[in-house]
Length: 293
Image (cartoon, rainbow, N blue to C red; front, side, top):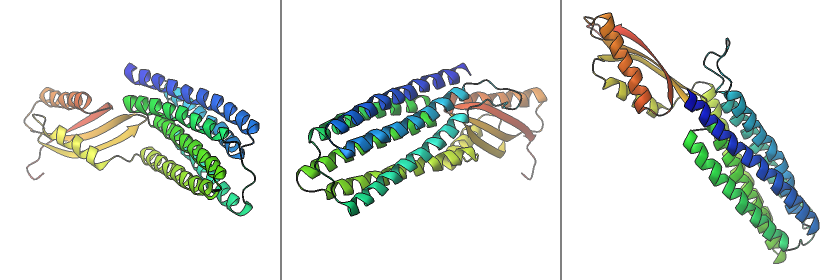
């Protein structure tokens, strides 16, 4: 159990990295956007300010997940992490929609002026920095199997793409191609919305106790190979934060003693925890193998 909480604490580092990066980059973009008269860079800076909220939501979710079980949360508070990912998906969707709306609006309003080309360099530098944050958080999220941190990582990636889009628009303006800004912005906005939808779908699937059928089949196959298991009457699994809870009803030889049947159930629990990734709890119910079952 301590390993679970240690993983969550590692996830907090990633959330803090995102928050600090957003604060620094938003200030840098807003300053340079004002200095170089780049509305695209300023808009990107304001966008990063909203992303701080998403990262803070992830951080809060990870903090709540570390609370120990209590009288009305007997399995712990691990699902707070999934709720944080869900909140992050809403914020990402809002950003993506805003990017598309602004692009369409600029299509009708026309080019407002030619920004300094140095603002494009600033945007690309910020994109590279945010790409580095994305790589860091993605690796850490994969290592600790954190959905909330992976959502934060995808948010980092979307912000890197927004900065690239801003740079494309600024460079396009230098060559008399303002439509490049619109095309890039719409493409980036749609991509952000798609990413937000993927996070939303996965989060709601987990919160509604959905579980991947292939993984469930793998669990069934692993249990069926255990010596003494004559059949599997029922098998359920659900994701609780970044861990898996398994409930299984196995069938054993009715001639076995209680101790022998209990030993088989112990083998099932041990196999699940040892061989199956992220299994936190296994509840095994033993039934006698009937002739017609």
